[in-house]
Length: 116
Image 1 (cartoon, rainbow, N blue to C red):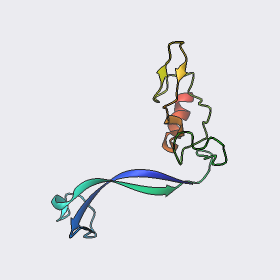
Image 2: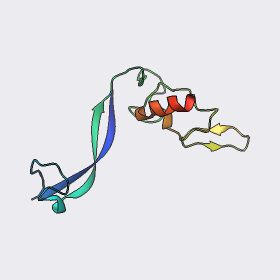
Image 3: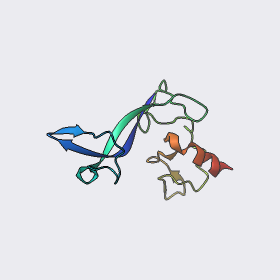
Image 4: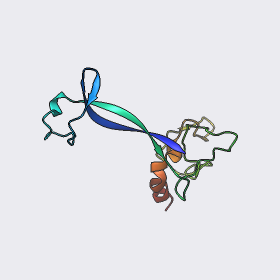
């Protein structure tokens, strides 16, 4: 399983090519002022574990996004005031259609804390 992560990186270009001076890109670098900040997307392998499981064999996968964590497929936060993106319908039910909070691998520890 591979997930996409977005990182911020400072990069400078010379003649349309990425230039690197092999230094840490911070204010101690001689070229720091020539660098611009970019969002860089990388693909990171994630192994199934006790904190992450991608059920790629599910007929609905991916129901939210490629690389999602399926460990909380039926959301354990449904009856809580969770930090995810949900709305309350007129009938009082919680609509979690647009919520991806429990499916982001980095949120595992946060969910466990909410359940304590």
